[in-house]
Length: 405
Ligand code: CTP
Image (cartoon, rainbow, N blue to C red; front, side, top):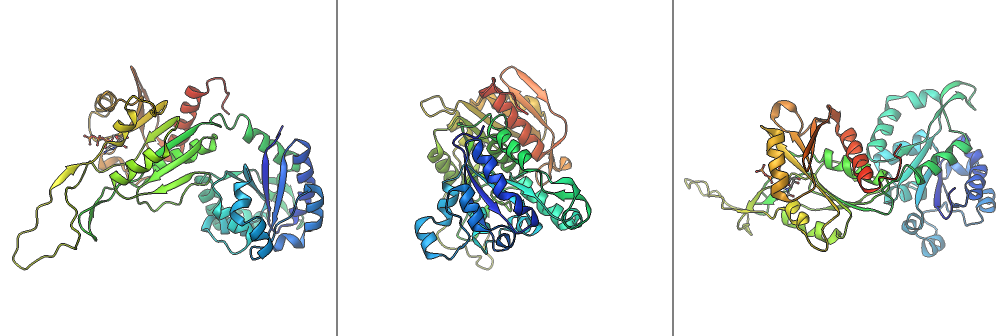
């Protein structure tokens, strides 16, 4: 059942859009409310009148309608939904989503949302198989968008192959699964730190490290996918903000600590950031000059706050489960066990970041999960898989009654 769930159905311009009035009815039969947003092209395949009648709600299609923006702005459309469902998701709208384009109401809502997004792709088999579409799908998946289908079968264009939109009742079932077993962390709040910190020397220079943020972002994506209301506090990275996550961008360790404190209380805190241990004691207010013949200026360092240790301190706002990372280059498990005790956290994910492992900039990670009194060796996994496995372990610990699929 989908009792009380609010679904924002974004319809893009593919022939499968003709199925949308029926999709709206089936979702509403199960207790959901459905509000529709149409792209211009979608109106060639299904009318706002039909969708308005079956949804018993206003249909939105114009980014520049003064009345609509006044009554229900594009941000409000997302705010009043529990989930966004893009069906059919054409190759074109998937490309726009992957590249962050926002040139009509449908794409603007999708770019502006912080809610989970599901998409049911529908297109010709060769468009589906094209490397560009596959790259866009991979990008969207890595940002937490859940794909429903497509399926193999006969197509409206007369061809046979992969690219048919998943049948209406199967889309409904995917949403039901999303809201039930798929979300064991629903109602929980999570905080994840990610990326490096930049510690300023003067207005143009800084001390930093090689962290890419991939692991922290993957964990935030996976926690949000299991239903946790997730805040990601990230240092500077090249990564896009994951879908369905509240991202807070900071630079220094002091800013990261302040952003983490502002996100409390949470049930789960995962500190995956590579926080610089030291900052420059006194940041120069003007760019340091290099007078000819002078010796290089000394850098006086001061210790940064330890965010993981601060969050782990006993007290009213201590998260129920605090997880740290241990970046080690030797005696990985032994050093990580000592770190667990020193920081006061509950679990440590230990990884070998020796240059030959390629962990820092790479896509894979071999980790050990250290909990009080036990240590598990995980196989080599992609950072996405480490994030998903860790999120499942967290869910099993916090909601043991829930079966996780
Ligand atoms: N950490 C933190 N704040 C800091 C330093 C580290 O929150 N100022 C967190 C990291 O996010 C990670 C854990 O502490 O979860 C361990 O980080 P790591 O760099 O491995 O350890 P350090 O505490 O810096 O110890 P060392 O460099 O001596 O190994």
